[in-house]
Length: 325
Ligand code: UDP
Ligand code: MG
Image 1 (tube, rainbow, N blue to C red):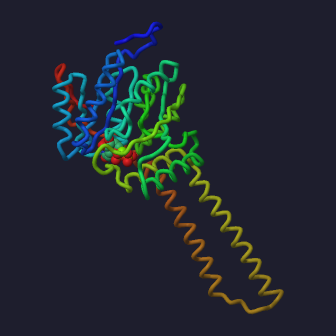
Image 2: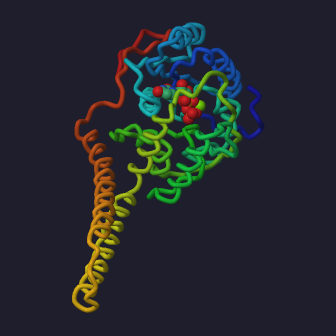
Image 3: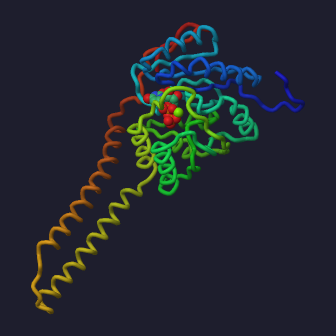
C-alpha cells in the first residue's frame, strides 16, 4: 500500500504454503495473522493450505476460510502422509514466483515474512531461517539439538545449525526442488543442496499456539535418519572403519595366542577370549547390516516409485475446482 520512494521489486504472486494436521484450534488465529501480514505487502498472494488427512475440524475450518477469502487454496491429501509429504504437496501446487513455507502451528511467525521478502529483494533466491532459541523443552529439545549438531558434522552439504522448514524459496530453486523425485525427503537438506544465492534470517521460535506437537518423537527420529542417510555416506564409511579396526584387533589376538602357545608355552584360557571376540564381531556385523538396511530400504522406496502423496481434492472458491495432481 504505502510504496516507498524507490520501490523495491515485488513478487508477481507470493504463495504461502502451510501444512496442517489436526490443527483446528489454530486455523482461525493462523489465517488472521497471515492475512494481516500478506495484505500489507502490496503484491498479489495466495495461501496454499495442505490438509494432511486431519481427523478433526481442520478441513471444515479451512474450507470456511477459503469461502471467505478467495486467496485460499486447500489441498486435501487422501490420508495422513506426514509433514515432508504435505510440504511436497504444497510446493507442487504453489503457483507463485516466490513461495514462503511455514508450519501451521504458529511456531513460525507470519510477522517475519516481510523480513524474508527483504532478503529476496536484496537478491537472495533462498532465504532460510535458523532458530536463535527454541520453545521446546526436555527430551524433544535435546533430540532436536543433538540431530542438528550431528547433521552439521556428518552431512555432505553445509546446513546452518537449527535451520528448519520455515523459508522463502524463489521460483528457480523451487522448480528444481519440485522436479526432484526423491522419497524420504528432508527439506532443509534439499533446500541447502539446491544452492543458488542463500540468505539466513535468525529468529526466536515461539511455542505452539495450541495443542501437542503433531510430529511424534518416532516421526522426528525417522526425519532425522532421512536427513542423515539422505545426505551422508559417513555411516557406511564408519562401518568400514569399524570392520578394519575389528580385523586389526583380531590379528593382534592371533599374535598373542601364537606367542602364548609356542613361545611362552603358557596354557591358553580359551573361553573368555572367544566370547569377547564373538560378541565384538557379532555386534559390529549387526550394526553394519543395520546401516546397510537403512540405505537399502531407501533405495527400495526410490525404485518402487510411489508418489510422495495422493491428493483427494483441491478446494478453491474463486474459479471452477481443479483436479488433483
Ligand atoms: N504436520 C503435518 N503432518 C503431520 C505432522 C505435522 O502436516 O503428519 C504439520 C503440523 O500441523 C504443523 C507442522 O506440520 O503445522 C509442524 O508440526 P509439529 O508442530 O508437530 O512439528 P515440530 O514443530 O514439533 O517440529
Ligand atoms: Mg511445531
